[in-house]
Picture 1 (cartoon, rainbow, N blue to C red):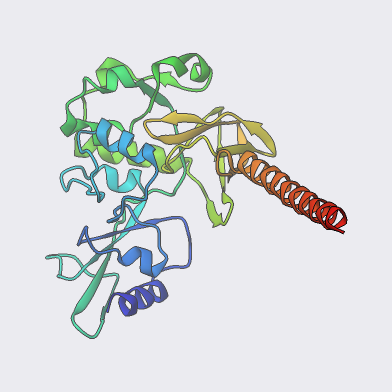
Picture 2: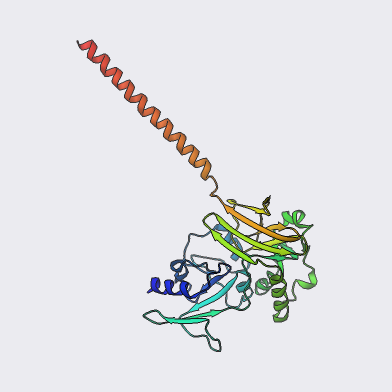
Amino acid sequence: MVVKTGEELKQRLPKDENYRIRISDDGWNLAMVAGLPTVNSFTSMVNGSIFEFYQSIGSPRGVKTIIPQEAYGLNPLLSERFYVSTTKVDGEKPFTQFFNGTGWIYVYENKDTLPLGFTYDYYVTESRFQHIPDDDKHLVLLRAVVIRDSDVSKVKNYLIPLPDSQLFTTGKGEYSEDLQARAKEAATTFTRDRRGFTAHIHTNIDKYAFFSVPYDKGWSATVDGAPVQILDADGMMIVPISEGDNPIRFTYRTPGLASGAAIATCSWIVLAVYVYADRLFFRRRAQTTRELSE
């Protein structure tokens, strides 16, 4: 049933890769079967930076990722465009629905979604972010990107510290304004491949682009072909971009993979030499023994 549902779901959703989905059952790995990116999953095989992110918003992740229902600001932040449920949502029209052989599947579209890549004007340090009530953090994240205190000097020419007057002014009205500001300079394209992902963002001034992809030392990035430094933004990633069009490329290489391959190759060579030398020594010793016995 899960496989059939996943295949049907993938056929019905847009082929565009610039979004994620959310499943109503947090323990149902439907997205994995469908080959679709998701904001929730039931697996321990996740990047460690994900734990950093959810810990910071007061919703620690265990074996599965659970988006708190009241933290609606996380939906656009994490680019959740579709919500998949086995029950109808009152007052909402499904984007699509189908019978999977056992029951009905309903898919709803989130109109407030953001692309997997957008820019910020403001930043807030981790130390300040920790003092914000957990109930407000999801909305602050749509207004300012969280950076490490030690990275302030790196972003000072690109981002502005979030004023105290805007730190706690969060509500439905401000939510809509912040959402529009993030969408104004967001990724127009986003494509994945086996080595990473590529995006294009146009901006009017120099600033940082945010990607809700877990930070890892194995990532490297270029903007318009030039290498740039990736900063850890509350477990996610940001890179500096310049005024105008910015083709952004992220490439992942497993840390230590090249060194490990080199060591393994050398080990095989040493082993081969040892085996060859041992056999050669054994043959010579056997020949010497035969000659002495004669």
